[in-house]
Length: 157
Image (cartoon, rainbow, N blue to C red; front, side, top):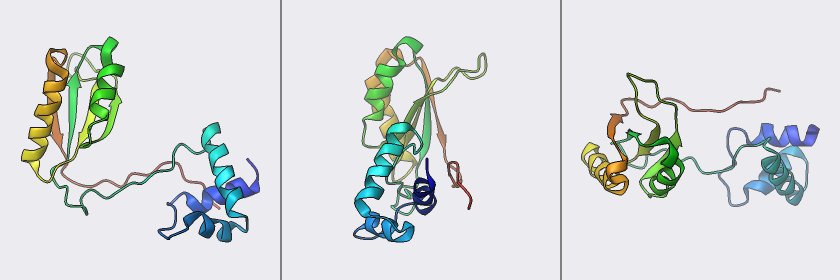
């Protein structure tokens, strides 16, 4: 990673500019060519220096107020298969494997479900239960009660 890579990271770590041509704007900020900025960001993604570039919508601002983390107890040897099925649903924004903490916490599949209200999250969770069938031995919905700011590692000047 050279100085230009670092400047690109610094210019984009809080998000890309919300403009028609965000990479052009980043290029102006770091005094580089837009094509070079794009190529360098692709390389840094491939190398794992940048984890991802994506949209992070504020679901509360979009009217989704019934958000709940659904947690499932499914067989470990099927978690990849089942996680892919559930993660592909349009109302699931996050789906991942987490370790169990027996005997008190048997859940290993976590899926964030978004809905307009709690009832819609409960209905969507019932659809997930139908997809998982008898592979889901138990589940819970942990409804959000407040918004926590999420951020990854940040470079400082």
